[in-house]
Amino acid sequence: MPSEMVRVVYTKYDGSAHRDYPARRLNEDDLGVWVGVTRGTESVYHGQPSVEQIPFVLLIPHHAWWTGMFNPPPRTSEVYCDITTPARWEGDTVHIVDLDLDVSRRRDTGVVELRDEDEFAVHRVQFGYPDDLVAEARAAAGRLFVALGDATEPFASAYRKWLSAVVE
Image (cartoon, rainbow, N blue to C red; front, side, top):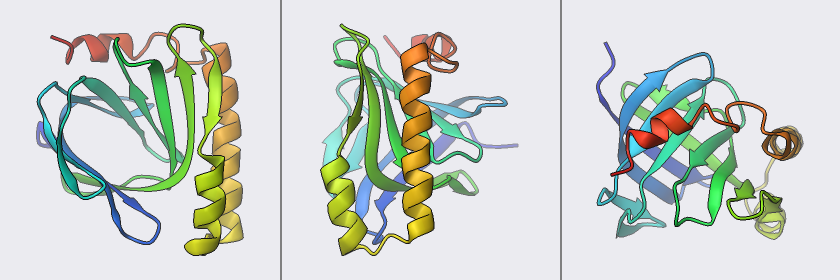
């Protein structure tokens, strides 16, 4: 039986630290594993200690090239998806490689944005992203751009019940 707690470890393609935090396993369904992070959770961001000020829920899909962060107000992004390699589980630790590109939906306007294309371009050269990885990352970003725009699940309302479990 899986533990109630999960360690979420994001690195960059070169193996450098990106994010690392504990999360509570909320559910596992056909979409993936849902984990929640409460306000006050101690984390590491770019190698520096941090404390989460705003709770969130993370969906870790079973085999997709992204993770989805679902946020309450006052965060300006309602949904923020990191383009990543597919998650790799080792026990109760999930390893995720962040590939720089992000797709988000603004809370106030519903506008969907593709973000960090410049960082993706720099790291593509610096880290030597293979062509197949670049193609997978761009395809995932394109699919997410459409899904966040037309509110395909889990981006419409499926996440709300899990978000309510971590918001105080």
